[in-house]
Length: 105
Image 1: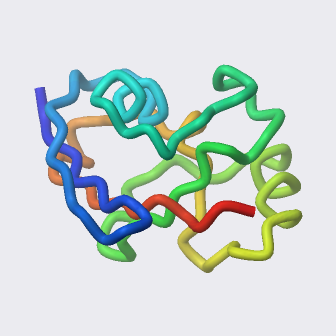
Image 2 (image 1 turned 45 degrees about the vertical axis):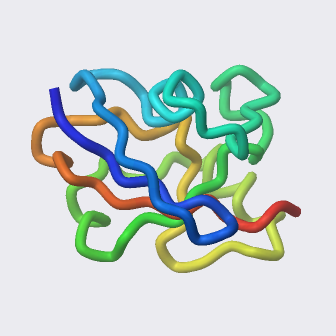
């Protein structure tokens, strides 16, 4: 079990306990982060789980796939550390992960 620090759009930070091997979107939704809509249910076909990863953790994530890249390209709020939470599997090396919910498109 590890921790994830989530900053919502209002700047309020919440600490979530998370089991390793779960995807970030599921952890945040179950943890009560209401700004993660995940309309597609985690199938990487929307971008309603768009988060911005703290730069200190980017190199600990698996590389972005082409579908995720294409979806994020359609966001006017994409940043260099943008990712889709449904595509991030929480691993032990990510304990303490810090993410911010991206502005809504």
